[in-house]
Image (cartoon, rainbow, N blue to C red; front, top):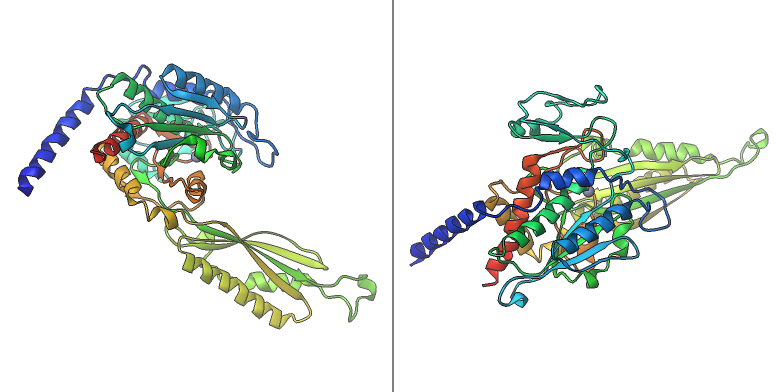
Length: 438
Ligand SMILES: [Zn+2]
């Protein structure tokens, strides 16, 4: 009985695979859409008091709202903070049986590199070798540093011209979500539940998501479409704390300082020197966390040191904090006159702490990735994401790939296949949810 059932499932899979290949195309190919969006400068800016941090992000927000409406989306709105929200109605007999799934991408590009006058260059039918960007020959996407290029032979690779970033992060995600909506509209035979859409400003400067209306968004579960390499799905981020260590000395006129001055500089130097070198950002990767002294001030009277603690496991984070406290005790013993204090603040937690209770989010993304003909892999993010923040606000949100590489720099690239396969995965994903509801 079981094997009959299994072969029936196989047959169904074949049928649905066939249905996928005979889909009516979207009204605009994902590549064309992407090339339109990257031309719009949406760079965000650090240390602004308003959201969005730059008005120019609203140009894209308003355009997306208009296009969503034209694609049949409902309840399309741009909030006072420039967040675009929309709802794609489900087409099931009973949509309430499928959870409302959200898809989120960000509109801004990194403040690190200019996003003005982006000229995308398409390297057609890439045949291997380094890619030299035309407007600045010193900007080279080398095979040595980008072994992923070997998997892109025959693909049309999309880069900037060497003077700007490309903006695939995250206009690829936006284009893929929009093309999914377009394709669903062209193909009512694809069954799906209600889909919530949001495009956010200021992701790169960490401001936009604070203004996100989780309740108004209306999704039970969501995905950020803001990842990289094809097939990579992330349900883990750092757990993060920041330590501030203060070394209080005593300043006085150096001419009459004998027996009075307590110079805090020697204590902070001693403390830094005690830090192990094998757990720094420059000496770790993969799942290994780090302790990163990254800023500080030095004055005779008082010196301060700021240290980032990053780990995927809370126990590991605790151990890192203990290490910093132990080093305080050691330096304090050597410099008893300097008053040393340490203050540790929590920044954010690994979203896996919550997502482990929602395994279907990752499982369904894996299934959709396989259906798109890709190999799904889990990649922990050595950073934080908007999705992590949403996850702790009650909206579980892992991150999906977009096909993009080398974010935040002039060597950023994506490809036609990257855009198309990521879109295909999204179309499969909404179907996986609909099928599971039966
Ligand atoms: Zn991004």
